[in-house]
Image (cartoon, rainbow, N blue to C red; front, side, top):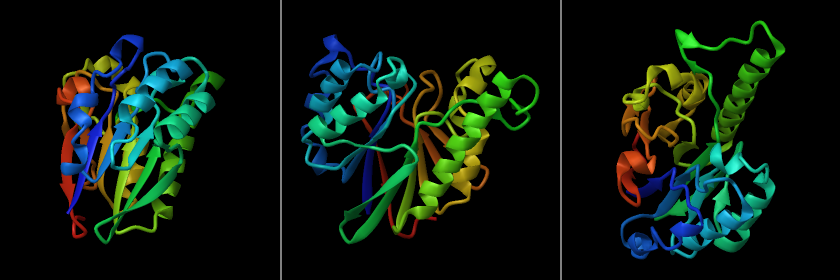
Length: 241
């Protein structure tokens, strides 16, 4: 049995130091890995990343993350990633994956930030102005990198980690007008083409926790305003489809 703890959208800033740490101190007793689903900072600065590194570093379990739109705001992604990895020991994924041994089972996690675009029947298309083509093209590129990352995992159990949602199910509660800015169906297609047992995302603060891809993969929205705790816990085994 693999125990996965996950949370996103913690939005840590200077006034949030130590906010989550007390609830994480005994994490190894409950989980084998912690997944962070983006928007770890408020404005994407290296200073905020140091707070994240102190909050989630040295917990006694591997910590794997993707960045979110807030983490990109200051155009300091390279610095933020370096701080999280160097000071916190946090593995930050973007179009790649990591395989972790868990009690004799290989857990593979593939991650991308993701992007918007909407969902089938109510989505943007790569037609018209160059700006619209670029918008949709970016989504297609990111979905393609998630597909490749999942396919490259040499693991017994696969998990997809994104910030943006791969399905509309977990957006229920959000205004439908902003669905195209909360996720894209191409991410769900990439997940369905893999052998993923679980997909984890954040971003939708007013959404709901549970969803499923068209192909039957479980999707969980772990944005902290949704799960209302320091993390949510999910259990998988090698037989999970």
